[in-house]
Length: 591
Image (cartoon, rainbow, N blue to C red; front, side):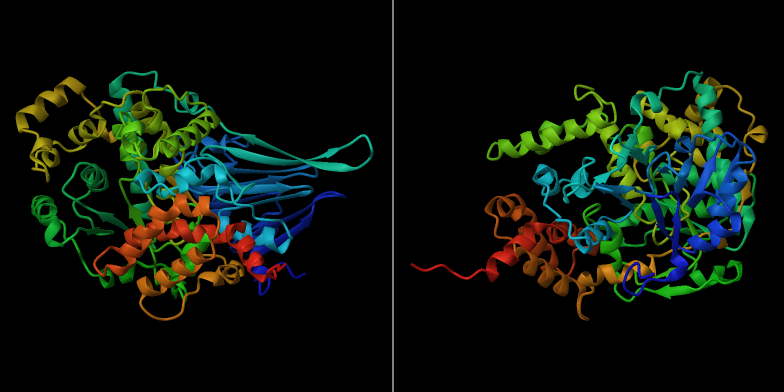
């Protein structure tokens, strides 16, 4: 059966689930996993189940979770995963609590298609002669150059009809028997009201700290003990990464299974000084070469090259996330597990007092601000957040930018520890934005480490303050908290990388050899010249101008340089380009 040109059969599973409905799943080794388990469900990725203090790796690891709770509410679990379940009448997709494994989908008559790639969905629509109409409702935010707009800002995408599913949600496609004897397709989304789903913890502050430490330390210690890979922590001079360092080092004398890295650039001089002090105080080595961890790699680990980095980037990011992180290679199975402070901004309430008016309003373009405001209002309504909520942008950040940006490493590194993307701690932070939760976690777990000066003197804590604060927080017994979780499944159950079956779909972005910035600049200009719609050109002109400026500057960091260009590139998925190309072929009428 020819599914896609040059597709890999091992990445395809096809099953007729009823007289009128067939199911196709495309994922790494999908057929092997499903046929081995003889199941009507499939799990891709990994999951943390705090309730049962367990970690589940891949499809096999997921099946172990059913021994604990066969009716588990997967939407409340962390990690990065997609779960697919079907019967003879319906197919349901669910993803993780923070939406790090994105789900996009469209429905067209008797067809329902979902993917984590907007580019793949647009290509499938083209193959089926479905028009990829440009969605004018998102131009205001998609063309906006603000940092929050580096990700899509609502459930709508640049391709009309393709929609994004917010975190902790599921989507179900069902066959309905009609009176005339025919069947039709119905799609239902189950999206929680976020203020209720992330409700404020109803417990004393001390219990919030205890539970937070348990749920941070447990997974770290569990994966440290597994073997076959190493954990990598980027350490700065700030608070967030130091909390993770304290958790990782708790109860150990050395960081033998951990690669600790920091920036040595002159602009990060203060960070380097702080890390040097910490290394001396706590006896660890940082910035070791990767070869130092070669002996810790498991069997069948292979570093695979990426022939076309921009093509791979487009398959996983185009139209979703603008920053252009390009990677030349990746491990076939998880080999280096990143431990990062992603999500700390939710706990700390970074965007709680963010003013949309100050960020977006410009006297020369008031209509643009109104359109941005209108789209954000729609996006908040979907997740149950009133637009008049004081910290509405914090909730918006949780559901859109945090979910998309923090999950962008997943195709290359499916397993990554993000301890601050913790439902309990984020729930506290969302309802108590002006808090010192991370500071108190550090004081509780390691008062000596808390006393080491930070990169900013305003963060420093005296030993007297630390002692008094620890007494205020009360005694917390770490021996009953710092216990490793149980791990089910193996890292070999998880495969990194873009599906080989999809690589052909990204060949439009396989740029010729040469300087990445210059070839990308040419591609961006080519697409821009094909857009003749004056309204679209007016909306995206600032982004296009900035893209040319960035891509001409050799010193501009590539992810930043490519960010405005990607806004232009995403239009190539729509009829904003196709329509104008057709117009050019039409003969000119003469009298």
